[in-house]
Amino acid sequence: MPILSTTYKPKFIFRNGHISTIYSGLLRKVDGITQKRERITLPDNDFLDLDWSYAKQKTNKLLIVLHGLEGNAQRHYMLGSAKLANKNNIDAVCVNFRGCSGEVNTNFQSYHSGKTDDLASVIKHITNKFNYDTIFLKGFSLGGNVILKYLGENNQIPKAIKGAVTVSVPVYLKGSLKRLMSKENYFYSNKFLKDLRYKLKEKHKLFPENINDEDLKSVKTLQDFDDIYTSRAHGFIDAFDYYEKSSSLQFLKNIKIPTLLINAQNDSFLSKECYPIEAAKENKYLHLEMPKYGGHVGFYDINNTYYSEKRMLEFIREL
Image (cartoon, rainbow, N blue to C red):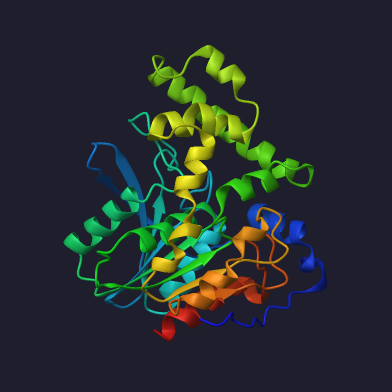
């Protein structure tokens, strides 16, 4: 599929990638949406919390939304997508990954960039319990990587899934980790690390046989966290084995439903490999849009409806 042109031209201040990222992550507010929580039990007896919001009229359409690293269903980029979907007669369910809904999950494992089995469980639950015949997927950052990997590694996608939109996706995890750990991104990486270390301490309390005091002390970078916890909890050899096997880049060629990937050129989290131009050219189902501006999960636009949300609606309406 040819690379898509873009119309995104924000106000001058939001052409700075860091301003776009920080404003959208910390200052944006989305009101006027009510969510109802549903807890589901996973095959390994752990749980996931799903936060539902609904269109005013009964509909057969649903949007499933996945958040990024250390996000949750109440992040305003999640609420913005759900609210716009609801306004356009589409129900929405915002998924909280394991341990991200305000309560520590019960198992030693949690979530990671390539953990697609939990998404599969959510989709199975929805298709078994409800009568939606048109389902769209939307994922941000880590959640976007999960969706792209799920679509590319799976030959048995339910027929109800008609399309996907992914935003600010680190499709090449090793390269993105290197970018995130650079001096330019210290503010972000330090915040992620602080949150992850807190959760690791909670895991230590529940599973002292798996995480000891020395492990906690040795986690000083995001890569350390993936070496000590992510790889150990999820069956990888080490952090680099996790990055290699979980990056969605290698799965893009196999995607067979219409999928939009929006990665801003000034996203400081993304390495050059995260702009998969050749993969998009070779796969008619993969649509790649690379706006000059937008930052990471930014894309500020007027009336508090962000460009990435407008593009989501435009894309799924054409399917």
